[in-house]
Amino acid sequence: MFHCLYLLLPSGVQSVWTVSRISAERGGLVTIPCYYDQKYKQHVKYWCKGYTWSSCTTMVHSDSPQSKGEVSITDDTDQLVFSVTMRNLQMKDTDWYWCGVKDGRDRVGAPLYLNISDNNLVLINMNMTWNEALNYCRTHHVDLVSTHTKEIQLWVQDRVKKASTAHVWIGLRVTCVLNFWFWVSAETFFYHNWAPGNGTGAEKCGATAAVESGGRNQWVSFPETEKLNFICCG
Ligand SMILES: *[C@@H]1O[C@H](CO)[C@@H](O)[C@H](O)[C@H]1NC(C)=O
Ligand SMILES: *[C@@H]1O[C@H](CO)[C@@H](O)[C@H](O)[C@H]1NC(C)=O
Ligand SMILES: *[C@@H]1O[C@H](CO)[C@@H](O)[C@H](O)[C@H]1NC(C)=O
Image (tube, rainbow, N blue to C red):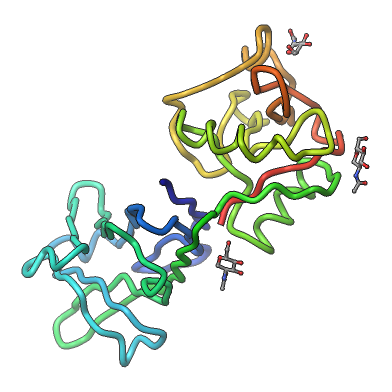
C-alpha cells in the first residue's frame, strides 16, 4: 500500500500550498504535506473536504480535535508544514480537499484532489523516451513511478512482467546541476536496486534509469532518448 504524489512548487507568491495531485490505494494510508508562510506559524491549521472552499466541511484542526476517525493532523511550526494523515482509505474518500489556515476572521487555503483506487501502478505498453514518459504520466496519471521502497519495487516487478521492452522507465534521473541521482517525486534514497556498475554517480548529466523487465529486475542507467515502456502511478 503506498501513495504517489506530484509536488509542484509554487510559482509566485502563495501563502499556503500543497501537492498538486495525489493518489493512494484503497485500504492504505496517505500523508499530505501542507506548506505555509512564516507569518502563519502560530495560526490554527485545518483540513477541509469538499469541492469549493466556501462550502467544504472541516475534518480536523491543529488545535482540536487533532484527530477524528481515520484522519489526523500535526503541525511542524519549525519546518512550516502541517501534515494530514488519512488511514484505511476507501473509494468514497476520493474528493477535493483543502489545506486551510485561519487568519483572524479570514482564512487561506490550497486545494488538492485525492484519488483512491485499487491499483495505482499502471504499466504503459508504449515506447517513449524518458521525458515523453514523464509527460505522459503527469498528464494521464500522477507521475512516473518512484521505486523508493522495497515494497514499491515488488509491485513494479509484478507490473513489468507484461512489458514489451527488456527495460521499463522509472522516475529516476541524474540532475545536471549537482550530478547525482534523484527521484522525480523528490523522495529520499532509503532503498536501491542498481545493477552492478550502474548508479555510481559516474553517469552523465541527463542519464535516466529503467528497471529490467526480467531476471533480477535491477535498475540500469540509459540515455534519456531510449524508447521504452514505463510505469505510471496514480
Ligand atoms: C483516479 O484513478 C483511476 C485509477 O488509476 C483513474 O482511472 C482515474 O482516471 C482517476 N481519476 C481522476 C479524476 O484522476
Ligand atoms: C516497443 O518496442 C518493442 C521492442 O523493440 C517492440 O517489440 C514493441 O512492439 C514496441 N511496441 C510498440 C507499441 O511500438
Ligand atoms: C549496468 O548494468 C548492465 C546490466 O547488468 C550492464 O550490462 C552494464 O554494463 C552496467 N553498466 C556499467 C557502466 O557497468
